Image 1 (cartoon, rainbow, N blue to C red):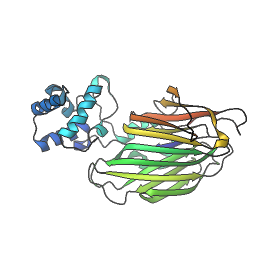
Image 2 (tube, rainbow, N blue to C red):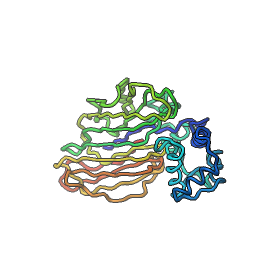
Image 3 (tube, helix red, strand yellow):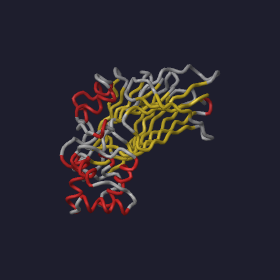
Image 4 (cartoon, rainbow, N blue to C red):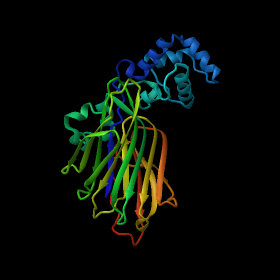
Length: 324
């Protein structure tokens, strides 16, 4: 059995200051700095970015992609007195030749999930707009595997930033391969649980969590939840999360029961749900019986950890699945 966490990491709508070029223009106007002056200040930081490039960024004709440009973006946030990551979080996926095609939330999700996905079915009409007011900056997932090798629990901590004023909630979807693995206990430690609906026919849990306040634009909040899962007959073999926008940082941890230790663990990436895995790399098991993957500047796509059981471990390994 495998599980996937389908969490929406939507970029704000591609209009006004809620896009990268719009936010950059607004910050430049607020500080009253010319592109010439900004270029000079970047040079003082040891970074050479021409006025023409800065102009192209603020007009939406290109976006920072190379390592030097991304370093310049961090310096720009300091020069323009913006919160760390305020501009970086608005960057979309890398585009050929630097051209930017405005991406709506639904379209970005479809690129990773595909048409008629479980997430779309679970959310119905809400799929088109869900979580468009916020974007995730940092995510930490913890998966617990029980004595029989089956999934016993998932917990997640998400740092979210508001793309517009007034954001007050977020929606999360957790999907399971095995219908016997149903949520039996749900705890929200940061935020307030508004909805917890398990759709047995889709083997998916929909959580709506209120932040406890309305966020100002670019304000951040933390949402944490934990889900205990009923025993299953099929051992878990992997865990995945999908993301449709960039994450500053993603930490995946899997804890194994000492009686169900895997013989091999590896990380991998998929470009979209169901596509072949790549960037496969073996990861070691620690003395605490866990493995982890830490990814900085996590690209849109599907990010997973998979494991195999050696002889003598209860059950056989199943096929993988994906979180988002």
